[in-house]
Image (cartoon, rainbow, N blue to C red):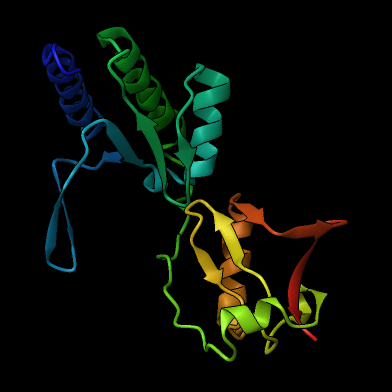
Length: 206
């Protein structure tokens, strides 16, 4: 990488070509050069193809599994609306064309599906009732998720992706936070916590 800049130039060329091709596929969109969030503009890492598939009636989790099992393409991760493909200097025109072709087939096979209505990810400001340290070292117990409303969390409540806690120790568990937790869980995200007999248990203060 330090001595052969053509490797990076080739990677960028492949990514820009793939992005252009993907954005011509009905129902699929790849993030382009710049991303604007609340008026702020951010540059885009071209080695990462962030591909929105929700207009096909698919979640990112479903698209991830279809690409892996039916087309032999291993993406990095699937999330609520998107699937992430990462390019590297080992990729070639052939491998990138395989991804684009698979997405075209995905569009043809799912374009007439009933589109799912995905809620935009919510952001919460939980009520911190105790310091994280105090909560962590308090006497605790496990309760089912449906009995946790109003309790104070003694652990992080987290779903991956993105791996950002919905709650940390010391914060009060609200109904809206649990609804968001359930929604993300039902979409196929990985729960980082305790599950027994298909029941999600949450560690709370006694």
